[in-house]
Length: 464
Ligand code: HMG
Image (cartoon, rainbow, N blue to C red; front, side):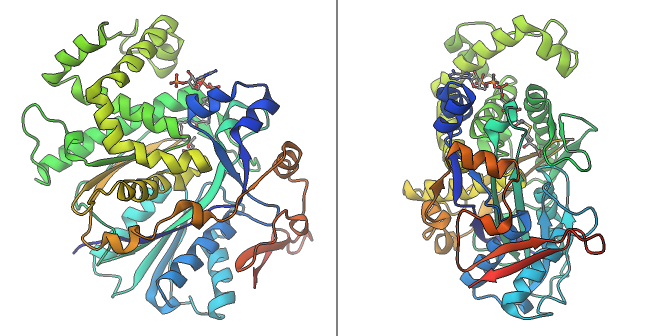
């Protein structure tokens, strides 16, 4: 049975901090953000928003757009790492909000949980719900998988340049108009790691930035190796001698904590794949320097990062590699369009990979490319850490959805924050009633209870 993504909706907060203003305030070169990381703007939540609100606003959009009633929805999952309750699942808050519009008890029949594994949990939720449909459990109903996060780092930390906020919801069913997932090839890797984590009670994560960059690439490569084996054993794709699995992916979407991480990861994976092939000889000639090897090739991530000579040479080699026409062709045709939305919005943690997918559809379609039948590969990564590699094929009806995609219109009128406003919001100095925007036709947070008996109870309303 086919199963996959029928439609997508996004909700991005309309407040943002501009990369140039951020760099000025932090005494950084703006080019580091804009060119080095690929960050132009970072979406920031208002004082009356939280991740459940972002999720509920996205859900309402997709339901209204597709004229769905609650009876049509069998499951509602929320994947997030911005959870504010250790027990009550975020999808229950979302259902509470949706029932303000659709009527008390309207979603009573609907199952679901909140899933957590840093940025990769949305991919696990998609996989589980796809299999719920494949198993015939859905009985004609759809699943909503929402990925919603607020990526917030400590003031003055290097992670602060890679913030963002937003939610995406994917409508899954057995007649998907957008993308049908390839069966029996989804692959994972997992390892107990401390590259990025957020201990109980802490609002911002503890991050080992360069370590996390390298671990991300290693874990995704391991998942790709497993994917390759499954592709061969399931006979999904016939990989001829001299070819790599990446040759069979028309588009590659990577997890995007900042847009240039996608570039870094693609270069790493392509280099790893091509190294085994006859074409590598020609590439090395074009690059003109030898591929560097660390002093301790079997060392740890720390030992490789600490090998300064290797790191400098490897940086140079990668830069030259990414300038070769062969690599440029792969980059431009398979990845570049997926990076556009990320640089306008920032890191969305669980939603970043899917915002990239959404971006790729919109901007490839605008180029006039016929997308039907194209295979899309996904490289999902979550710190802590796990990676997932999977793929799907764009369906004949895709145009019905993609022709109406317009990222700027869907975000709406954005408001640039001053540095003082950004600091006030970041340090949680404002109450919900001090919100900067007064958006209509959206859910908003009214109050978080502080009394001992009901501490943490949240009151939301739909602002007509
Ligand atoms: P940093 O260490 O300050 O930056 O912070 P850098 O020195 O690595 O510079 C970044 C890039 O800018 C480099 O380019 C520089 O060369 C360039 P690259 O070498 O990579 O091609 N650059 C400049 N370019 C032009 N003009 C200049 C200039 N200066 C430098 N003047 C870091 C970067 C990402 C480490 C930091 O922002 C951070 O810690 N971010 C948070 C962690 C993160 O995003 N990690 C990514 C992988 S882990 C992941 O994706 C999981 C995550 O989403 C969480 C989850 O799973 O839930 C984070």
